[in-house]
Image (cartoon, rainbow, N blue to C red; front, side, top):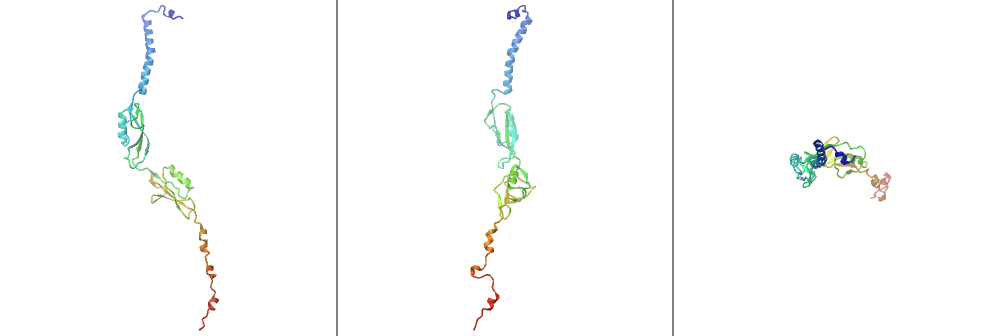
Length: 220
């Protein structure tokens, strides 16, 4: 159908109103969509991330909220030099420019020293298994302390500092543990020479006969 034939006999006001409305809709829909997209994605909007490190969680959340940002705790660690419950790290860092509604990820300091229950590793399994188990529970280890005369690498005790600790005891997790282990059996061959020591070096067989004593006389 030719365009000319389409408009033939359609000169009424209602027809032309419909045409105008359709044109407006075709033009307006993309414009509105782009506007809404910019509004939804905060296009061109820049908010500087404040520094919340060292702040309490309440203060940090308040500062971020006042700037249209959100806070989420993603990790917690223990730092005895920082205030309890304070923010230790933040991502993104302060000074970065982000859009409104951006999530700021925080690492906070625990309110107290982390504690954990000591598993039973004494006399069970290998040294490697004991180390792997303790490390999986978050314990830190120092160099092992060997004790000679016991089976090599057998765990015979656990110390935290100078104190002996035992299975089932709840202890600070960040204070290093020392495993007391067997250093191997003592080599007994080092004493063989002492055990074989006799009086041969003195020209004696080590036994004194009574006869020798009886034959020793002094004549006056």
